[in-house]
Every structure is written in C-alpha cells, then in structure tokens.
Amino acid sequence: MVRNLTTGKPLKQILLFALPIFIGNVFQQLYAMADNIIVGNTLGENAFAGVGATSSLSFLIIGFVQGLTAGFAVKTSQYFGNGDEDKVKRSVATSIVLSAVITVILTLISVFSAMPLLKLMQTPQDVIGYSYNYIIVIFGGLGATMLYNLVSGILRALGDSKIPLVFLIIASVLNIGLDLLFIKAFGTGVEGAGWATVISQLLSSAACAVYMFKKYAILRVRKEHFRLSAKLCRDHLGVGLPMAFQYSIISVGIMVQQASLNTFGTLYVSAYTAASKIDNVFTQSLVAVGTAVATYTGQNYGAGKTERIFKGINRIMAVCVLLAAISGITVYFGSDLMTGLFVKNPDPQMLSLSKQYLMWQGIFYVCLAVIFVYRNALQGMGYSTLTTIGGIVELSMRILASILLVKVLGYVGLCLSNPFAWIGVNFLFLISYYIIIRRKTKADATRMPINDEYVRQSA
Image 1: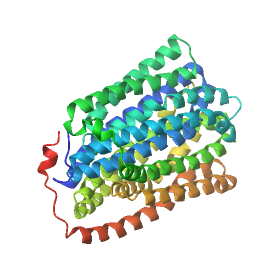
Image 2: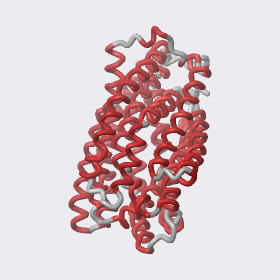
Image 3: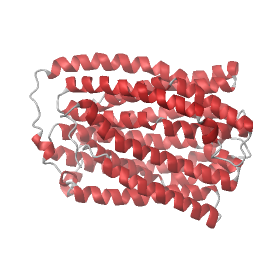
Image 4: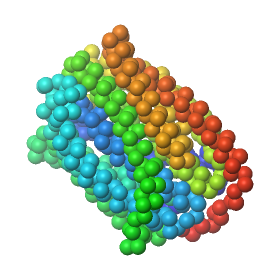
C-alpha cells in the first residue's frame, strides 16, 4: 500500500517502512550466501573462493544499477510528496526508458571487460576460471537486476516497502531451489549458481512489475507519458548518475582492496569471502534504515517539511547506534559458527582470519551507520553531487589504506581499510547535512503546506 511519510510520528514511520526492507535485504543476502554455501560444500574451496573473488567486480556494475535506480526513485518520491500525479507518471516512464538504454550499454561493457578486470585484480590462477564462469552469467543477465531494482525503487518512492519484500522472498526461495537443481542435479558448476540468480530475479521482478501497474492507478503510464522531455531526462540523470557513479566509485576502492587480498592467497580469499558475507547480513538493518531515510526525506522534502526531516533523522540515528552495537557483538562471538557453514571442515586459520576481519568491522559499525543515515538523507533531498564527492573521499581513503596499511600491518591493515574509509567520509556527510538542513528549514518556513489528502487518494 501507499505510505504517506509526511505525517505521523517520524521514528515510527521510518521504522515501519524500513522493517519490510530489512527483511527483504536479509533474504537477499541469505540467498547470496546460499549460492556460496552450496558452491563451497558441493564444488570445493577453490570454487568457493572463485565466486567470492567476483564480489567487488560484481558490485562495480550492480552497484551502478542500484545507485541509478535509487536516484530515479528519488525524483518520483519528490513528485509524489509534492502532489503532482502527472509528474509521477512521467517520472516512471522516463525511468523505464533510461533504464532500458543504460542496461544495453552496461551489459556490453561488463561482459567484454570481465576477464581483463579479473586479471588486473590479480585473481589467483587456481580460482580465476571459476570467477569468470560465474560473473559472465551475472553480467549477461544484468537486465533482470535492473528490472528488479527499478520496480522496487518506484514502489518504495510511494511508500510501499511490503510488496518488494514478498517478491524478493519468492526470488530467494526460487534461487536456492535452482542452485540445487543446476549444481547438484545437472552438474553445471559455478555458472549454475549464476543462472539460478538471474532466472529467479527475472521471474520475480517481472511478476512484481505486473502487480505494480495493476495495483496503483498513479503508476499506470500511458503512451503520452513516454514522450520524453529533455528536462525530465536531465532531472533524472542529474540525480541517478551521480548516485550510480558514487556506488561505482566506492566499488573501485573495494576492487583495489580485493587485489591486495588476492596477493595473500586462496585461503585468505576464502576467509575474507565468508566473513564479508556474514558482515553483509548483519549490516542489513543499517542498509534498510538508509533506504527508508531516502524515501522519508524525499517525500518530506517535496512537501516542504524540512523541520520534520531534521526530527526524524535525529531519532533514527539514535536507533542506529544501538543496532550497530548489537550487530558488532553478534558477528564477533558468532563468527566461528557462521564461517563454518561455507566449507566442509574449514581450516582453523580460515576461522581465525574470518573472526579477525569481523572484529574490526564490528567495532566501527557505528561509523557505517552515520554513512547510511546522512548520505541517504542528502540523496533524498536531491544533493547527489555531495554523495558522489563522498564516494570519491571513501575511494581515496580505502585505496590509501589498502596500499599503505597492508604494507605495514599485513592482513590487519586490509581489515582496517573499510573503517578507515568510513571515518573519512563521516565528516563530509555530517557537516554537509547540518549546513543544508538549517538553510532549508528557514527557507521552507514561507512555503504553503501540501494537501496530504492527495496521497491518500492516489492508489
């Protein structure tokens, strides 16, 4: 259902909106873990390391898709918060056309650059074949990823975070079933895990798109809405591309990090892969809050309720501090048990390396929480250039740490490279947010309030 985030108690509204996103994100991470667990336990440690070695390369492209569609959704949420039904429909149509064009371009680039990038990252020779066979399928099916993120973003722009969850759960269950079918029954190898991911995403997102257009009248675009205007395209790309490049910029730093890791050997890659999967699951509460904050901020910014944005951000940040502490403690004390799920009879050194990584990440989760809350608040208000600058800062800090700290501290330096980058970008987002929010609060004091009856009648 449509959720109007411009009324009601701010903290309650953000948390209620974030909860389905959190559940969905956890499912998404769990089925990604299922890929790795099935590969590791069926095809062996080298295959497991090979799939894991593609994570940074995958994020380079898929992160671009996520940022782009999230930026398009920001514009949709602002038009919705402002009560402009025609602009909402034109925003959806513009997003669809731009996404289709960019998908074709991205697919061609990613497929032809996959092997050169794997070699550039110094992927170990005993796993690079597994890496290529897996990632080429993921890149070939990029259209399914684009469709899922686009549809989910549009629904969340209207305040509906429940329906994307339902279809994501369907995709998760289907993905695990297809993993077992392709890898164990058909003996396809690691590429079977890739096909399982692409097919499950495609079927789920297509069904979600059909539901979206049938359920919400405000999203039923017609032929005239596809007559693109240069201004709308510029507006959407002006928010979408900076957010997309921000994700990709961050991923370049992660690729440098992965290249440093690869020099340590396959055992370290396996330990890091397992630890990063665990880390991803236990930071999803912060990711979900960040997604909710972007929609909350976008709707309220469109409605001219900057004071309400300020109140909501302060309260949700306090909750995130608690979530960060709980997650950090859990990953440290549960690391051995969770790492042991990925491969049969894990090496004791692998368990130790995984625990070491999770300890250093967990200590600094609060810094990660600051990024998700304040970066998404700035995105929701349309300040995507600032978040891109933040991505550049994060990239610089991560590369610096991956090169210098690794030389001095070895694997510990690699573990510290993420926190080092988080701390560096925290200052930019905090200072920028408080300067902007104070200026906007004064400016919005003279704006006429939006009639909230509009959003109650939009569905």
